[in-house]
Length: 354
Ligand code: PMP
Image (cartoon, rainbow, N blue to C red; front, top):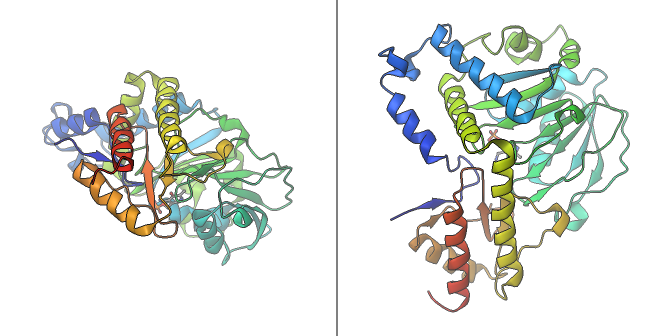
């Protein structure tokens, strides 16, 4: 039976990537060593790291004055590392768009005074606040795609301070103008590969901000100086990211991936909007391409649907506990057939099949 995995992360990976990883597992490029066994100082691993770095630069069109770092730890570590390094005057502003914004705010609080300059809480996080925004803090933090609530920014907030954006659940799903951001970060386990690594793209001038009194492991400037090889990096996660980025290129690059993502999301939103049983409550202009929450409005019926969907090979559709209902995560590796199967199952369940 074919199983389609709608998990929010760790999430579906492209099958060609898994097959390539399998074929190289025991003998990486004739070295008779597994990638898992390679020293991070070996020429073979340095080749993997260089390829991953240049593929990020190429696919996202990252300008030369940005550093590309592959750091250990989840995106959650960035919630603390960012204020530790960048909050010179100990003031950080946030746009609060849901659960992950709130976690970022809570983790910055020990290091800086935090201020919410806009929030969509009054709207139960079904939209993204609209500007104009104003900030005079050390930086403004936004959660670009809200994995739990299924919302996304569409316009880059314009403020005169550095803009830091959590792209964990939407990195490389659509083109972005990197030059409009100062820091972009994303955990790997959704669109980039395997858990254990976070991609950080940081404007080089910010590296000067790190205070002297900060341990080496927590310093962006040290990681940048050593090109992510200050200590042992998450070597296998970096390798998997390299394979995922190569796969993206083979698929036609970001424009081809974007077209597929838009078509898949449009098809699912259309099915939900037409349905008399299921609905998605996010305002249309802020609907995420990656995470699509929906429900029947009745917990028992939602549970019956989850069981029914699972019987048809559609797994991990349960919504986050803070939101309830269902959530379909359609990351880059989701095949069209998965979305088609979900739409069919929505329809047959609505027709009364159980
Ligand atoms: N930010 C966002 C938007 C996320 O979706 C997640 C994880 N789901 C995180 C941060 C935290 O990532 P991690 O679990 O890698 O620390």
